Image (tube, rainbow, N blue to C red):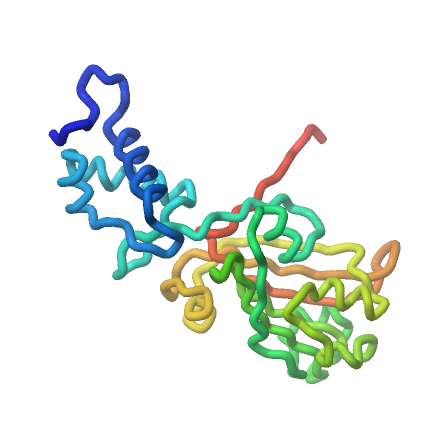
Length: 245
């Protein structure tokens, strides 16, 4: 056993000790995106078994401190954003987590929306809508791909706006602030085009959000947006506060 490794009487489990040592190793000089030493190197470095190393790494992956990329290795995570379920923009969520948001516009054009978006927006089959697809980043690391469908009639000049900021602010400035949303979240596997944008393996687990947004007070209000957002599950976490019904 290497010098400094936990003894039988230390009262500290080996995998817990290794996890702490890996955290110290990261803190001493590794940055987000840097590769961690291989399992064999860590095994030799700390004088423990491969099983102990793997368990310590698995704990850190679960905590969001490390991320595994199939076929490439284990890397220092860019951090996980924990968001409560509330009405807020991506930019607000990221800044609340202490991260700097940025956006890259993938598509801003007119297109025929999928049936569920057309139904929400009150469009007939074959009618076109505004499509705004964007890659959302936090501290320069990809977090989500957002696909937003919006009705052209109330928003004729939408695509002429700067869409690298908050879309909600653009809608508010256009006279259609988002007042209410209906949202579902499900686990999914990343399709190849989205995986490429998020810098993950195709089929990797992601969180898929479907959001129906309304403007105006009362119900039902004006259906103003239908969005499909795909989040990296290793960089985004949902937090809920529940009480008695």
